[in-house]
Image (tube, rainbow, N blue to C red; front, side, top):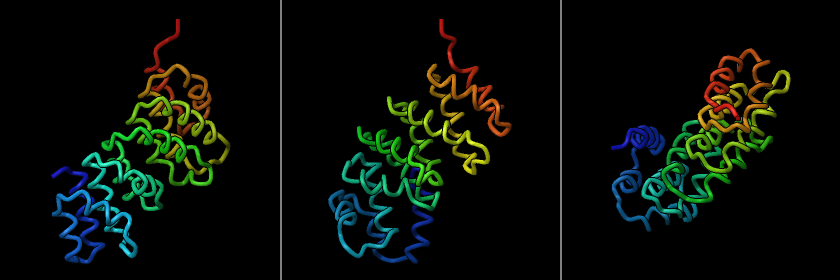
Length: 191
C-alpha cells in the first residue's frame, strides 16, 4: 500500500469509527461505486474523501472537483491527501485550479498545498502563480510566511528566470533571505 494512502486510510478509519461502509469503500475496485459516493446525498466527509482519493490515484477524472475542494480545505491533512491524488490524476485542469487557489487572497491561509502542488506539476501556470503569491506575501507583517517560503523554494526548484525580480525582493526579508539566495543560485544566468 502506498504510504500516503496508508496515512489517509488510518486517519479516515478513525473518523468513520470503524464503520462497515468504510471497509467497503477501502476494499472495492469498482470505480463507479466510488464515483457514486461523490454525488450521493448524505455521505459523510470521510467517505467522500476516501472515494475521491482512490479515484484520483486510479486516474479517474470524476474525482477532480472533489479533490480540488479538499485541496482548499481548512484541515491540512485533507489538503495534503488531495494534492497527492491530484498530482497523480493527470487532469489538465489541475494546474489552473491550483493556481487559482494559490493566488486567492481570501483563501491564502490554505494556499500552502496548492503552492506545493504547482511546484510538483511544473505546469505553465506554476511560475506566474508562485510569483504572484510571493509578491503578495512580501508585505510588512504578512502572517503567511510558510506560504512565502514555499513559493521561494518552489521558484528555485522551477529554475525560471522570470522569478529573479521577486526573489531579489525576498532577500530583504530575514525569514526568506537564505532560501532566496539558494533559489537564485539555481536559476540559470541570462546571457
